[in-house]
Image 1 (cartoon, rainbow, N blue to C red):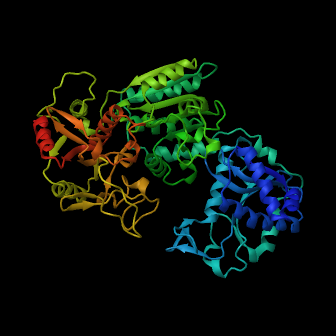
Image 2: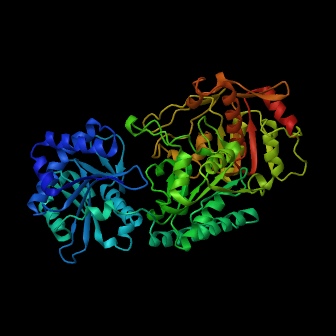
Image 3: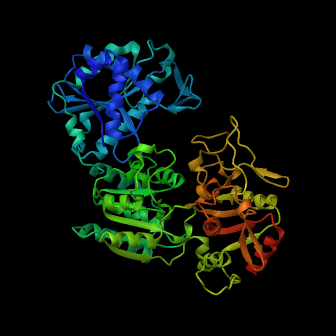
Length: 615
């Protein structure tokens, strides 16, 4: 949780020479973050920081501390500037979070006050007042030294590049934090003088431990309680009670809880219930997944009315710098998505680490909880199996408590259907092959002869108030959107539909990428495993692509038919691994339905085999 620390007097001195300022920033940045800085960020420093230094000097605030590029704990976000001083009236520590913008022209995006269209930028961005107020709230929610002291922290957006209000008039009023322009510098200076003075107080922030506040947990408890739509049964309730028990007894010996179960066994219901119950007890609890789609949806569902509650939902790679046992409970949902390390393609070389992601997750909490399904590992490098978790935990000297869920709440409550899927895919670990479903099985499975028929049957159900989606194996290229429309990449004969939207915003009627499974408009695109995993629909349509065909009494995988870039390199994903991963992909896709699943394969022999296997 580093910040690049200067006092205002030092900032004023180095700001006289912008090149020297940037060099000073680069040296400090490399020391704190061990990574390089891009040209655009250096240009922002060169233009923005001298303007702020001039305002601090004019306001007579040369003794306050200045934290530059301050990293918010447990996130990848950084605040441009935090000014730390003493409140002139109360004598308490006082802080102002500052978001710096060079914009000269900006307006609300399509009438939406939360979004801003900026001249020169291709996509809308978050309103800077909303952005910086989010940083303010996050700090008061997570830094222990600021708990119950929300009044200590203010926030401003400073559009110093706008020398008058004309080009940005539409975004100046009614925001979550005050907005100042280069033409309102005296007003900014007055605001700073009202909140800051005396000696610097950066150490209050830099020395603070990190955990969600009691107030945040109370808000989350109410939010989750109001949103809960499930009743826990059997081992589901056992799992929640066991988690609570371990929190109460947590001491010098750490116990790791591993809850395993197939699709629809209630893992996410357990996660949300545990989150709600622990929050009501005032415990510091966080939820994490490795899926962007799943995390975004959990934020939307469980934090529907509270942006602060949404901050409880993290990603597995959020804990790279967490202190040991920093929180009471970490609930790792969809833990089969745990990666070997938290490095990704955006991680700079100097930031890369060999530390195992599972080590980061277990270390961060007094009680780490993992909810997973071994048969949902769909990428090479995902290590979240019960065996992996047990082996690592025991090697660290931790006890492991296992719970295996055997209830079935998806697929019409049909354990037989899930078993049938595992059998036909060869994932049944040697269980004798008895493929046919019982005649009285409650789950509906249909096989159709064309994608048109697949879509027609699902659209009819979707129009009648049921939730329905079509998903497919990754056997067609995936193009970027063209302006305001998606490309019809999934082509089968004369039927063509786009993959789900890649963007973080709506494109035409298509919902943002992470919300394809849950928002209106998603039916008209085809989802893949990465957007479908973790979700459920009343009716699920599955296109079994040409990478999985039935030959000689069994399913065979066809590597050349698969277009998933994660599987492209046979050196990193050998044929044996590819074969297993593709089978896992189709297990995920085939088990999304609550009432029924409709199947289609462009391969006639595979369609005929599916009908035989069902009957």
